[in-house]
Image (cartoon, rainbow, N blue to C red):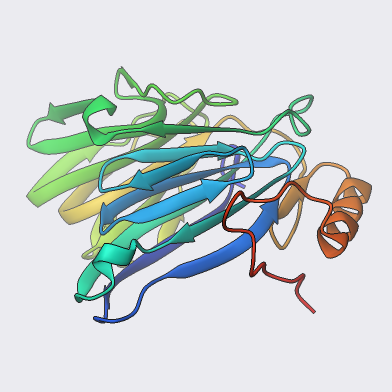
Length: 256
């Protein structure tokens, strides 16, 4: 874990061929919040709270699973006939003690609501949390940051040190962090208390926050209590989880 971040899925970049789409069928979560942020393309989110939202580049979907939620993510029908680029990020944020079994909820924040600043020649967007003196509107569960950093053709910026644990993910191009090369698609965990310079041409994501303590992860379930994960497995197998309205079938079975 880096702060509360327990999982990072770098989606693409890729070209989705004409006549096809992305279809992530109904699946469950407990004990975490999923944070979806796109750079290219768009997706439609539905979940068992009744939320329906189309996410586009620069917007943020924050879904807190808490005691249990099911959701789907799909390409839009009107996008499927044409080839299109898709690139994005989904991260999982573990919930703090006392909030792991909270009631589920969903937030969507459009791109226009996300705070942006230019520091030197570098563009910074704070998708969630606080850094570089900016605070996103997302209702986070603990102190954290998820930020997009666009270095442009050849930018340099010190990595914000608001939070004790931080990591940098190179989205495109090879970057330099504190004199060390960070290859495209790689993630570097920074030493606490340091403020290394991030430099290069391209974009990166900075994420981190304050540590929460030990968490267990199995498939889509995160919790400090192993027994709670076992109960979630049984509930999903029995299909006693909340259902996604109008989009629950097919659903993804437990891994074998």
